[in-house]
Length: 229
Image (cartoon, rainbow, N blue to C red; front, side):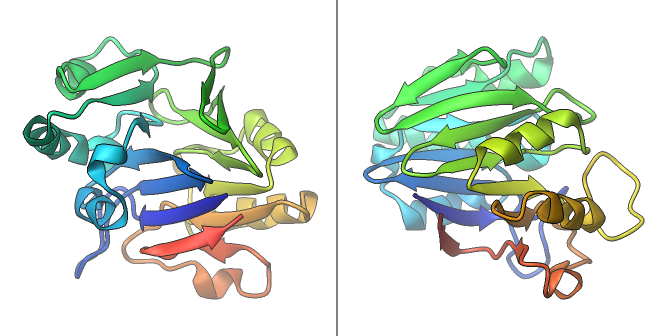
């Protein structure tokens, strides 16, 4: 199983080319795209044949996780290609704007949903954020959890208990107070679950946690990088 980081920033990218949230998870010949934040489409196009994309997961509906879906629709129209979009149902105008399109086959999920796509099984856990956000647990040759955006909550522990690697929203600096985990949360979780790898993502444009995470075993996500799980 492999994880490719297309973009790691939030709530906006970094000057000079940094993109907001977007990832690819591959298990053998099967793969799924996780979120499509600003700037991620061009990187996605350089990584995979767009006509091979069948599955996209959207963790929540904030702009830094969804904005490139809009321009992605132009490309899908040109290619006459349709993709499955997995996300939670939300009664909002943004949900309708994003997903009301003939090249999107929307499949709504919740914590009781289990989806099998090829060699991968998908499950979902509600997290704690300013809007509804679900973590996705992907089981293949290994198990990966992507938290999306979240504060610490009990379901984060479930992610760590079930996973070989957690791609976690835990990159904010010490003392940060807001709807995201910070590096203190990451270090505490790493000590509690030493067998689970952590890749810290959703980084602020003006703060790189790499130095503060040195020696902890926690990986600071790097864009345009593929990690073997």
